[in-house]
Figure 1 (tube, rainbow, N blue to C red):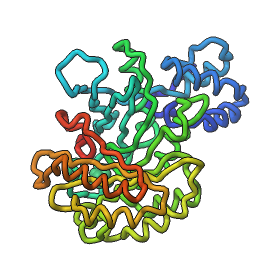
Figure 2 (figure 1 turned 180 degrees about the vertical axis):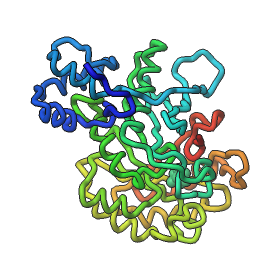
Figure 3 (figure 1 turned 30 degrees about the vertical axis):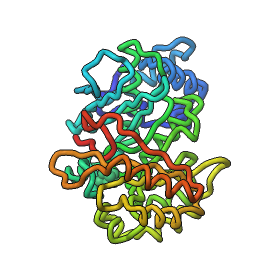
Length: 353
Ligand code: SF4
C-alpha cells in the first residue's frame, strides 16, 4: 500500500461532516463511515481511522489519504500559580509553518468558554489592541481554527479535567469576518450533531465592523451569535479606536446588522470597551443607548485591559457602574465583563503571537 506523505494528505479537521460524506461517496465507500469517524474523533478525541465497525476499504482509504494533524500547544500559561484546575489558561499554538496564535480557555460556572483566533495577527490595527500592534500575517485555515478547539479539548482530557467546553467565541487574534469562509466552515463543524454538537447560541463571532463580511452574513445567514465592537457612538472616536471605521462607518454597519434576521430570543451583542476620559462619559452612554436601542441589543461593557506600551487607562468602577445604569434605563440588558486573565495578557485585545 502506498501511503501519501502527511503534507499532501487532506487534513481531517478541514472537513465538514458533509465534506467527509461526499469524499467517501466519491470513492464508492459507505457514507455511514462519516458519522462513525466524526463521532469518534470529536466525542472521544481518538484520532485514527482504526475504529470498530468501519469497513476495511474505508480504513485503507482514510489511512492513505487523511491526516489528523493538529496545532501543537507549545506553551500554556495560567492566570495564577495556584493548583486550582478551573483557571483561565492561555495556549500558544504552533502550526507546521512555524506561525503561532493564542487561544484562551476561560472557566465559567463549571464549564469552559474557549476564545479562538481566526488569523495570525490582524489587519485592523485597532489602537487599544495588542494583537493590532503585530500587523497581519495570514488567515487561519478551517483546520487551524477547528484544531485550536480539538487541541484544547485534548489538553483538558490529558490532565483529567472532565468539564466541557460549552461556548466558543471568536474574540482572539484576527477579524473573523475578514476570514469568513474558513470561519463559516469551522462553525459547521462546531454545530454538527456528529461534530462538537454545540448549540447555535453557544458560538459568538465578534467583529470590528468588517462590512463585506457582514454583507456575506446577511446574504447567507450564519446561525450563531453576532457581536459588534461598538466602543463609541461617535464616528471620530470610533475611528481613533478602530481605523476600519473610516472605511466602513458605524451607521452603514448598523444598517446591515439591522437586516440580519435574528432567531427567537436572540440578541446582537454590542461590546463597549471603556477607556477612561475617552468614551466612558454619561453623555456617551445615552448616545450609545439611543443609537442601538431598536436592534435587540445586549451590551457588554469591557473595562480596558492595559498592555505594554499603551497610553489608555481603565476607568474607575464607579464610572463603569454609572455608564451601566444609563444604558439599563433604556431597557437594554447590560453586563460588565469582569476581566479574567489580564495577569497573563489573555484578556480581550491582549493576545499576540
Ligand atoms: S481588536 Fe480585533 S479587529 Fe481590532 S486589531 Fe485587535 S484583533 Fe484585530
